[in-house]
Image (cartoon, rainbow, N blue to C red; front, side):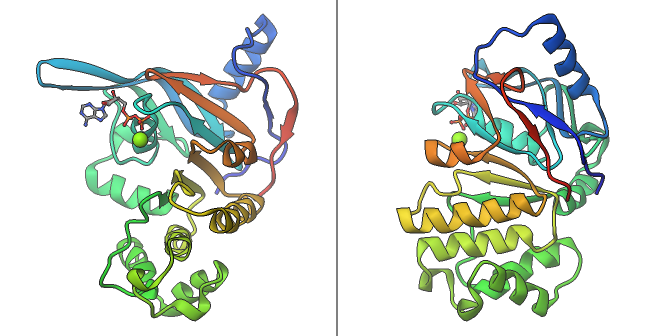
Length: 266
Ligand code: ADP
Ligand code: MG
């Protein structure tokens, strides 16, 4: 994967009005193809039906650079899932351009997009979405199967990495919520995608398991993964380097002003 060694991300409080120089540097960032791993350019997503049109995401332009950890926040209905579905290539914009790893997702056929998604993105869901009649090991191997070929040793190693080496033959119903989420993380990691997309990863967990998942995400970030995480939890959001806040489909992104974050090399 192309990586960024010395890239800088400027962060600061929301609502700051950018100076001309800051706006210039923001434009510079959003247009640097070597830097942005996720780049949105005037992206909108409208849903039509029942005689009306809902603009779930309105004219969003921002980029996320390789190795960043970004938290997406906002009230219910503000467009977070819409944005995550677009970044995860599960959906397409109705207007604007979306590039993932410098590839315009609109240029790909459905089959190419499936392959691209399996290569680039690991999904971690609040509801886990594990297959109930498959063991932890088989759930992880299923993700390998959709990507290329299965390798039981690799799947076992992924489960060991999340501390579940002794639970590989358990069904999801025989695992706690925290353990199921760790299977979900092992499944997300199995094809070594550069981007991890997490939708409320700790939304269904108690405090002890939240801590375990937070530490796993911190390790993955330190190893160079780009993490995009929807969260309502201020403690989880505080782990991210930058917040992207949504309100009524509008994006408030703050790479402007404040401290400078140096990204890690993968
Ligand atoms: P969030 O994840 O922040 O709760 P969503 O992205 O799910 O928000 O939804 C944003 C807006 O788009 C909401 O008003 C929601 O009702 C609407 N919406 C989401 N999905 C659909 C859909 N498939 N059809 C019509 N409207 C939708
Ligand atoms: Mg949602």
